[in-house]
Length: 356
Image: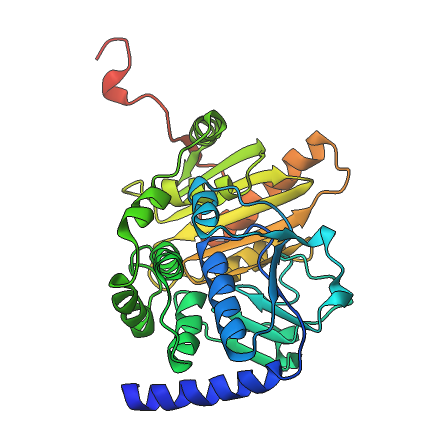
C-alpha cells in the first residue's frame, strides 16, 4: 500500500479510536496470562496513545506470570507495574482493552461476564471479536506493536527510547528478526524504531540472567525429546515457568533435520502445549485446535501455536495418558508414525563401545 494511502487509513482509524475514548475515566489494558514482549510492548504503546489523546489513566493487567528472563528484564527496564487481574475490580474501569489476545482464546484472564471495548491483535480474528466496538485485528502482521506504532505515528507521537526499545524487541522476538511471518509493515516499523531505541538496554534485555531451574528444565526437555521422522516431541512435567515450554519448542526446531516440534508441560493445573514448524505451507494454528479438540483451547499462527487443557484433579497416570493421546494426535495430523520413536540424545553409533 502506498505510504499516502496508509497514512490516510491510519488517520481514519485514529479518529474512530479517539471517539471511543471520549468522556471515559479509566481504562484497563488486558494482556495474555503470561505476556510476551509483543503483549508488553503493545500494552505500553496503547497506554501512550490513550494518555496522549484523551488523558485517560490506564492500568495494565495479566493473569499469570512473566516467566522468561528476557521478558522480566523488559518489564524492569520499562519500570512497568503489571497488575494481577485477581487483585482488580473490573467494575472500576469504564473501558477494557485487550492487546495481543482476544476474548474466548483461553489464554487471558478476562472474566466471562466482561466484554472488551477495544481489541488490538495480530492473531486470526475470533468470533467474539466481531462484537467488540473497536477491533483492529491484522493477522498478516508479524507483531501487534506494529499496529500500535501506526497509531502513535498518526497521532504525531514519537516513541521515547524505552518505548521504542520495547517495541523493537517485540518485533524482533515475534518475527525472529523478520524471518517468521513478517510483512512489509513490520520491516518498516523495525527500520523506524532502529534510530530511536536504546541499543545498550536492548542488549541487556536479550542477555537476561537465568536461574538454575532454567538449566534443569532444559536438561529434562532434551532428555525426554524423541524423533518421529522430522518431528521432535518432548515433555517437561510440572514447571514453575510456563514460558519454558515455548522456549524449548523453539530451541528444538533448530535441529537441522527437524521441521516440527511439540513440547508439553504442566503449569498450575493446566497442560500447556507449544507447536513450532518450518514446513512450507504448514498451519500450526489449525493443528493445535485438532489436538486439543473439545478438551481445551488453542490458537496461534501458521508457523507457531499454543494450547491449554485444564487438568482439574487428574491423577498422574491419567495426565501421562493424556500426553500420550495428544502426542499421537499431533503425529497423526502431520502424517508421522507414533511407533518410530528415537531418542534425541541416543548415543551416536560411531561413539558406542563394542566391535565395529
